[in-house]
Image (cartoon, rainbow, N blue to C red; front, side):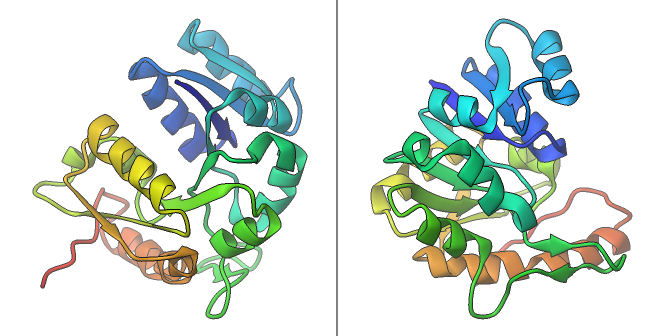
Length: 215
């Protein structure tokens, strides 16, 4: 499968490397085709890895992961092009964190809106699924880093798209428990977990941990 990764931070490049390791063809997209991090990643990763602009990657991928910072995700996706996102599953891993005033960060959007919703409104023909935004990047593709069963969350308006993302999380990444929290408005809660996640990360000295829902 051809997959686009938008963003060259730790999350984007980790997901890109993991997906190549699973045999997928992956293009990493950034603002410019000459992005140094993307260029080096593709050179070091092998023939199934490539890089280009956001538009190049979005056109290439049958599935698109948005791994850009939530504060710039709409801008990045506009550069990717609505025509390149139309009809595609768009997995939104972003978070609306604002570190401009230091730690702890604030949220650029919350309570009555979310980045996930903003993306779905801006690109109504994309099939947006929020996922993987509530954990460390290495845990996303290797849940065994934390002992026992714990939970990943998804939400989105398109039931078929959510089912495909849940399949990817379980079959490709090894997640045993994936909780569907409903339509794309569920992004509000998933994104608002991040201040707590960051505080716990400091408490646990940035060791891997995750959430488990116990009933």
